[in-house]
Amino acid sequence: MKFVKLSENLEISKVVVGCMRVKDAGLTGDHLLKFVHECLELGVTSFDHAPVYGSYTVEKIFGDSVLRKEPRLREKMKIITKAGIVLPGKNKNKVIYYDSSKEELLKEVDESLWKLGTDYIDLLLIHRPDVLGNPAEMAEALESLVKSGKVLNIGVSNFMPSQVKMLQSYMTIPIVTNQMELSVKSLENFFNGVTDDALARRMPLMAWSPLGGGSVFKGEDEQAVRLREVMGGIAQAHNTDLDVIMYAWLYKHPVNVAAITGTTEINRVKSAVDALDVSLSYDEWYQILAASRGYDVP
Figure 1 (cartoon, one colour):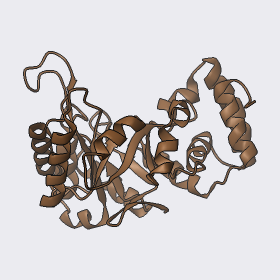
Figure 2 (figure 1 turned 180 degrees about the vertical axis):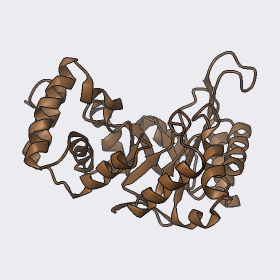
Figure 3 (figure 1 turned 180 degrees about the horizontal axis):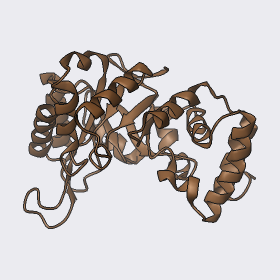
């Protein structure tokens, strides 16, 4: 396994298990525990959560099925979770909204710690930029969480470069990563300054939906068809599968991407691991870029 160093006290595995679909997949109890053991055996030590996954249930399912059953597994894994999204009905609210107030952040972290069955979180991310968020208040909450030992590192998710810069300007501790949508299907964040800003900060990125939500495999839109055709040939040349090539394409980027798998099937997690041993040439990488865009670079 390869690792991504985010700070002096945190390295995450280059492949991160995304736990968002745990409830929908019916993966609980011993079945989830077995899946976690299989991931750890592959060297995948990082597990990505959020309070809102499974409508506020996934963290508790993980805690009950894994860490409360085998507490010593905590030493072998890195726990990532988020804060700042409020789903309809939680606070008698009619709509989903983002809340990065000090009160909400502190409350959500305490709830996550209890649900997950741990006394610290390796990496806490602000889940979405909060238009009403007071950065001074956010910084105060985040730094107090680190000072207390409840959280070891701070990151963000879905933040544009100006938003990262703004929040960092209020903080004395570093923002160590930004979790963004990145895939052969979704190129926007490669060309809007997100990766450039991350490189300038020496800040690795985490990629959510690294397989484009699966649309490349079965979509009939022109982009998906082009990608399947081009990557199919490249996969054949490397004697591997389409999803392996999609992960390898992300790993090629110098920003040092950690890919978050969205699967509860160990064979699909293994594809993300296998991709670490696939080195695409410049020509192959740009062939895939051209297939996604529908045109060659000038």
